[in-house]
Image (cartoon, one colour):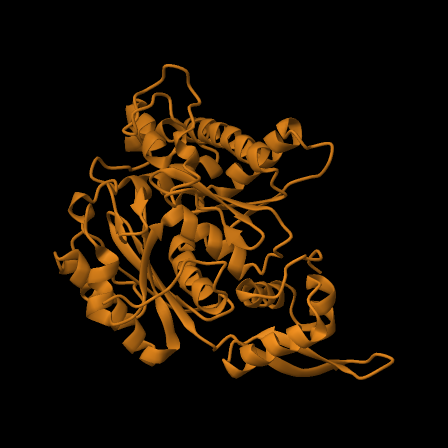
Length: 422
């Protein structure tokens, strides 16, 4: 049960009630009164509107009490669907989720730097990978997936396009996505909303993954929740009282640019010795290629993308290759230092590791983060920190994109404002 809130009745009350039902349901109206401090009539009015809007439904179950039996409330999983597309240099991943965060559809197509649709994509036959125009590429993928699932347009809350930051959330575009120069400066949100006639937002992959993990795990809003996201770079996000902390420009959490090596390698951000220059997959793969004979022994070719090469290296580490394990362990130790900094700054009690970088060797990273937090977290004698691996680290950002639009739609006030653009 979430902690008691001192929230007055008002526009934010709906978001609060939705969040409590999402994380605590099934839950009764009486329990909502006790958790929020709002009056019984106020709770009844908000719940009735949520039921009328289809966001919440009564389960049909009751809890026996000395008085009138209490009817239980849960989120209606079919109230709306969210669509998230994760933009990578070699692939575009589209995920559709229901209101409770369950995945109902997924498709993977070749990205701008690859040469064709992935034969294992679901649904198949999108053909979106060969289109050069980024806006049409995204629009085509969205249409193929939603039409393939038979979703009616009015049932879709919106589309979120997420990728490596920094992002311009107000304008709706990426500023300088690594490996995707043709996407920089595009007003993606406006262009896509005009073509698809749905609400569209653009956000960072780390921010999306954080909201996605918080939403789909049904994490209580009383938790101070954090996420470390590792793909080509390293980012993070923090959820406070049910809402993502965004910062002044929605670019908070760039922990990959925390300096871990004094006077270290120069980073494109302008600093030196940044965490992702040493711990991110592309940096680890670069060091692996420099070890004589290692790449050949593991059959990592010069043409392999860093994501694939890192998966191969991580698998070798798990299977006992000493040179590969040393490289992954070094990365994990540095990433754990970043985790300690994140926990100490925000006093986190829950931390999830998500992103393609954790798909194969996630257990190594989780173990090292837990070890360092137990030894170095400032509040280690006050409370522990729960550290978990995402249940779907590779698709975490796309799932999070869908969660972003759902949160903004069914719990306005806790998520980004969703509005169809002209």
